[in-house]
Length: 394
Image 1 (cartoon, one colour):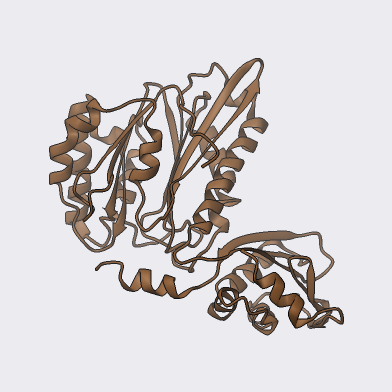
Image 2: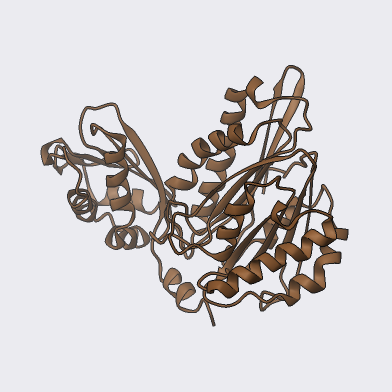
């Protein structure tokens, strides 16, 4: 990856292969945060959220000093026993770190419905704590992966009053991706100084225009979470540089979100569905998601088949007020397919096929004259997607 993952003062990390995963891959990660760090977070909207989500939400009210993340087991659908195991993992590391157990946020990702084994945590506590280093965040980017094919990380800096503010983020996600939030975990750290509420406000804005605009398969996970921790080590306060900070944070979350889509399970195409012209942004989003979730549209994308009728049909069933067939214009990249609800006079099958052959495709749908526009990023639906998910537990 061309962007180096920059160290953030006040953050130390380490990852190991603990045996949770069947293969000897990194699967247990610890992030330690310096005293005075503030942390904000957003979580999945799935009502059957996993044990670590429930615990992390409660612990977020404390002075968070560490994050513990395992991959290979989601600890979801495990009932009261799963909650007890999750709390125990926090207790195990709290003792070694010399902090309270509710100052640790736990996160899990992997197979749903299996109890998380405690043995890997108990046997590796000392090894993880002793290995903590400011240079190990790239290990976390690898240690949190499940079906992902590539690591996802990005850093951004900006200057304020002669001082440099650094933000670095890692993420995982490949399948079961749908807003609110998707099967994804993301951990972002910065050396700016901020209150928890200031961080929460910035994170909500950033997530809404990034992680909540991606969809691979329409499934919302039980374990999604994104955290933002600020260590107050740069001598710059967020209230001094809010505009610059928000811009940098937006860039990080949007970049990570697009990386997740491009690494979508079995994906061969990166697709932006851009909808505009309706009286509300919510209406534009509904149309965009309807098209993005259509199996017929997604399989046509995989086949590089310019089957514009599938796109038009998806728009028509989006249950959004204010859509008139005579106002619909549809483009594949810069090639117009539909003009005022009918096939464009300049459209040719050869031209459409040429655009569909591309690995990056924008489907632009204009539905009127209102100045609204929303984008959703998605993928095609391939044979490999079915294979990956059919064999996920084997």
